[in-house]
Image (cartoon, rainbow, N blue to C red; front, side):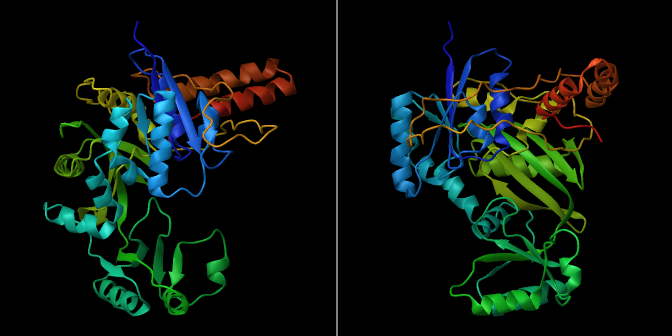
Length: 410
């Protein structure tokens, strides 16, 4: 009998509830037990896991490594998927292997390279992969020089932290004075240059920003799966243009991503992002972790999380080539369960706390187009609603929302 696979996800982002769902729905029919730890008691990650715990606060990276090694030894995890302190944990890969846990993360050298966007851009340019023009800025004077140079070439200037994830800290520079226009509607990423300069001059310490031209859509995120042998098993692009999403296997995006993954040893699941500078695709970012939208590849008939776990276990999943490219779609939000509030505060590191049984949506049938699924659901709802009481209708609506994690066709 094949034993169950025990997987631990540490403090990660909420979208990884779909990562966990896909592990349970794996095509091999293997039993998977998922453990999660987090700093936020209301993270849906904790409710989706089989067992969960709050993480200890205030640990240094070195102390966190000791905490993680102890958890792996005590609970016999087969695979650990780290997001928090990924670089420090990757430096101790052999220590985790010694307690029987495979670390699903790239080598520490690769993680360090892509944590700092300046180091990353310098490294990829040596491979001949185009990157946008950039300036590293720490003072107001350096900011003005960079903005002037970009605007002289006809670009809009933007900045973001040299080290950071996602869109945190991203702003677009404007010369328009601050006015009520900036207070109308929803908050805007545009900030007047004079206000940024004033803030920098008043700051107690320098910033560490990357200033570059604002890049245009489409944005293409290439999800890669690379084995410890350095060979890429999967490279599929997800396109984003406004609300419209789609998939691509165009070599102009796929080939640079493959080259990056192979050259820098970006083992297991990584995400490489491109945008347009004029008519040329340029590198925007490299994430040494599974992307939040990775589960969307299920629309192409691919279960990437399970293939990655198999690689970490020393098994060979083979090449993951999409049997088809899914239709264009958009992404909508839906409710997910959170854990019940405990009567007593749990102790940090206790992974045996009960959590509600995870609610999972049905796996889309491979080959079924999203439009067919949506139309069938919409056609069935009126007949059901006519026979249901108001309370039952509300329950049906809630259940439908909870199972709507698959993208909807636009």
